[in-house]
Length: 372
Image (tube, rainbow, N blue to C red; front, side):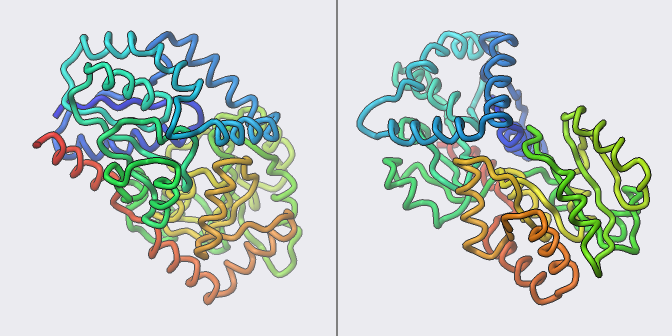
């Protein structure tokens, strides 16, 4: 098969899910092309839209929450949303992409592209399998507007929520969220730390800033370092936030034995494998990656909306902790590093509730849809 994969740069999770499926398809000998949906219009449009999204999330999370709630109120199986009509204008760009190459199937990891493809299908211009990936542990607004062959969701327990929002049961495929094959690499903590050049004789606390760098990490680092009867080494991943990286490097320049500051990292699954405990915001992809790696997990800085739903899903099943204060977070980290009972309960819950083979299941489904 030759598969078109449409993603969007509004947060790293959509791209990560798309790349995971592309990786799995290529392992099977299929060809793929991954495209930034918004860039089909122009790179400028993609940059401006995604930049505005990141700015709102980072600097006005309460505004993002209001926008998300407004979307939930507008979302209905009985009418099309304003967002649908905006994405309908992208039909001409999709036509251009389909005219340029022959594709046997389409995979979509963002609602915007899914709506535009739905319009193309309703006009009788899309006659190949069309599969969508929900990247959060909730039914986000507007999925009921999408006329896809399959909508993959993270867990069977979420099926009723999607149906209550108007998604037809026949479309749902509760297979999990696809993650990179690197998350399934089975090596020991010691071996992972050796590869990373990190100390193996102390607990390793990993702090992930997220693709958008939401939230300050300095207070948490200080709380971890001040915690009595706990002497961890702290590795901080700042992602693309160069300003945060420079600030933390300056602040902890005299403590290289205790704190390692990293920028953009391609080795996050290896870092999670090395970690005694991982701190991250509850993005759908970052949470799933952590659970597939099977690392003790503490949530921080949830963005109101889909991330609070992700957090609630994980907490309800014992797969993570989410203390309110940095002092309580540092206490939770020490607990997971010192209590075998608490540690094993969390890791067992992750293994029970988060599928590790979602990308392969998606490939199976695409092959089956194409064969019909």
